[in-house]
Image 1 (tube, rainbow, N blue to C red):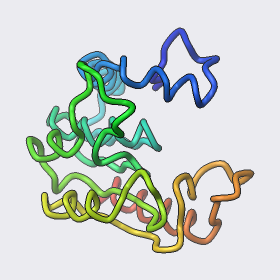
Image 2 (image 1 turned 135 degrees about the vertical axis):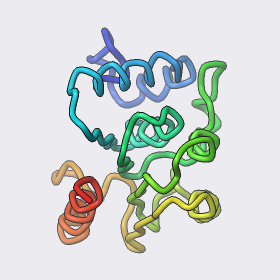
Image 3 (image 1 turned 30 degrees about the horizontal axis):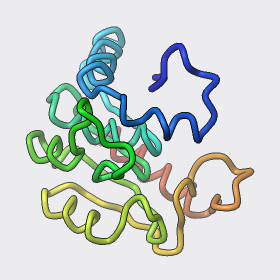
Length: 163
């Protein structure tokens, strides 16, 4: 799912600059509509970075049986906050936190230790890779990529989704 429909050509900085204008109800509505189109008996949600943040927020919808955010922000970064943005942790607290398995890197500034502890306190499962930075699973061309950790995390995600 594209978080910036009609603006797919935005570079990373433009996406960050536009984040405060994002609207949870629109994005979660799109996620629900996509889940309905799939029409399976069980539906999972997976997301990376901002998509992971929205996967966390989807917990409150009750629509997804299993949710796997990869380094999704547990709290909205200060510069991204806006009137349409709710806190991911609040969404998790309102939903079935037991459906969530967050994958994080121990060196990821977007998921600091206090946020990870707060997420764990909801009952969500958190899998932490202590030496990993943000983005360690996807895009093998990036310096943060960690092949062994990525393979392990993807295997755990698949197991979680299919459990």
